[in-house]
Length: 243
Image 1 (cartoon, helix red, strand yellow):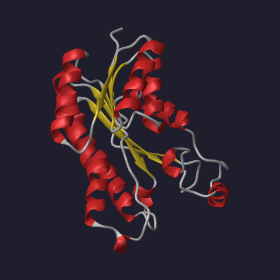
Image 2 (image 1 turned 30 degrees about the horizontal axis):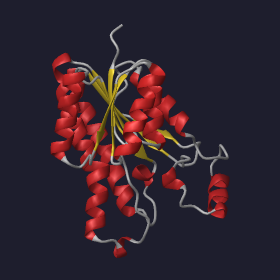
Image 3 (image 1 turned 90 degrees about the vertical axis):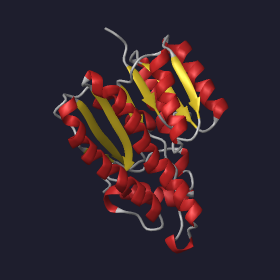
Image 4 (image 1 turned 90 degrees about the horizontal axis):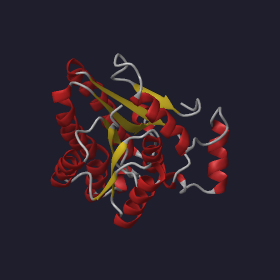
């Protein structure tokens, strides 16, 4: 079978890196994106050697249209049209909304929502002609229910959820699936802001009794790339029964 081409944002570490590795282990060729040049290029080299696939590294800002357009164009030129798009890049902001600067709001929305829009725009553009493709957006339970002191982050993920549902309807006639994974507490750098006491208290609220792992997220993301086409427009919650 012809190897699939996957495009993964926020892939230098954490959830994105785990998803990229899972896809590579299944024989996918990859384009991976991230802000930090050295870790991203090291990750690409590691995946290429470990799984005998081609892995391209594109360091840059997902909220920059010129960068995203160029990354998709170079991916198509070197690997072929994208079959799988994983929108994972995201940043958080913890604090009172009344104390948040407009520049902080704009930066968060640019990464968490505009970046998803841009990747969907150019990714779907490569999928339309072949009438197939899988788009998976990594979201959050806070996009479903909101979180105190994370209003901007919640708003961005709520936007991702709404975009997922709307785009799924728009692209279904073209054979393209669009789904999202709304994550709960996952053991990543983003959640290392918690003290030991805070983390223990949070784990006690989660019926599964622990944080999720990036490997578990990667397994679900890959499973969604293999689902029947009738599954689309869904926000699939993965939170250990928390919310």
